[in-house]
Length: 567
Image (cartoon, rainbow, N blue to C red; front, side):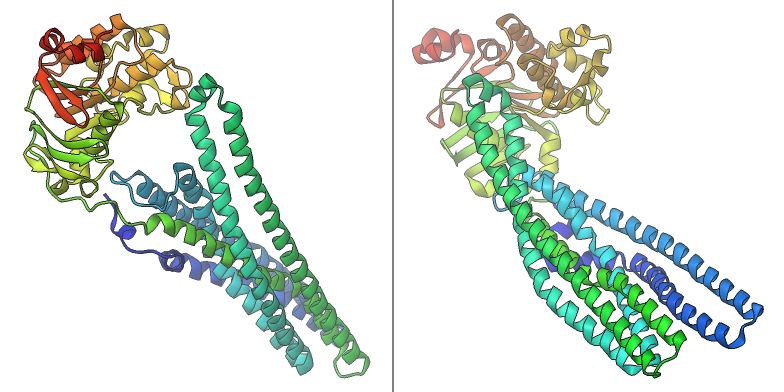
């Protein structure tokens, strides 16, 4: 189910506003501390100029001591305010990035997937990591922008007190620099957004290749797949180089303009001092401020770039967060232990499919076309939402459209033939929540006992990502054990034994029938062992049920069925 936040349309600007609003307290504290840091930095050349001015006049040790003490206070303020200011801002930044990562992940993992404009899981991963981090950078950007602006204003006021022309020079120069850089930052934003999209596509391509690595090796398609990835990655590399060039031009221009302004202030102050319009102490202050002002100006001039990058990342996140749901689930819950009814479903290759599995019954469906089996699994797993097909599916007497998706998943588990295996242990793959009461029985029923016995760690044997250190049959039995351990009221299995030998398959079929006795079970398979273990078999041909009987009766009286399932 989607949260309230993810149901609202959320463009990039709204995401940034949300981030700023949620961290207003930390930003105020960070702005105050960073403003104090910039004020202390500004005070240093001002204090130095005053020291020179008064020391030359008084020439007393007392004035010198006070001056040294003042400088020590300023330096301490600079050190502590920077340290604690950045600590506050970075903590808020990290926390906000975490919030967006969780929210994007929740959208990607929600039971009824949203229409995310064709984004693949690899792209969503990039959005949940890099884009979430770059969006959260706005938490630091705004306080640094405000504090840098305050430093420039204080420096301009201090220089104006010495001579109005120096203050005006700083103000006019700052406005000019920012105007030039604002134009350049727009190019950075558009280039960065394009780069992020291409990097995400490359990441998605890698994820696809990893998933299909074994099949690719099997039919020799790994070289073609690698070439496809190389092309996508090359596009991402070229765009990254373009972004780097734009960033380099931006940084170089900002540095050059800041240096020109600092030089102009220093030369103007020297000219005024030479003409006697300002004192030596004011000259020292002006030259010091001209050097100091380069840091806040540099920081200030970089902020538009980071704002555009954060905006681009926020727009990418909006693709996921504002995507409309495929369907709006209902609020109801099915009755426990109920039956399963498919009534006139038309979806893909299904042509008005109708059948009923009574509560506590073990039914097998023998599909003559694999595509029809896949379409049926998609409907039962709610991967194809009720609006996507005609007809009705009822669970416990209630239509799926009226049930919350979480309630459907709690009541009915659909285990696909290609179920994922996760990095961890055998135990965590079978019982991720650690709450299963039938774990030993599930391990035994799925014939995973020999895999457990092979390893000294038993169920705590480490499993690599995607089950890379397990054989195909072991992965399949591990997936089956997980489905059985869930112990749901209704269990749907799709080809659970295609990768195991015939003897093991016979044992698994008997074990499933025994373990699931009294629980509703539907197995979609062409396995003779599982078909024979079922109470009755439904033949699915051309999208409809064409025959119904026990496996042995169908073998004896239906030649087509015999050819389809006999091995």
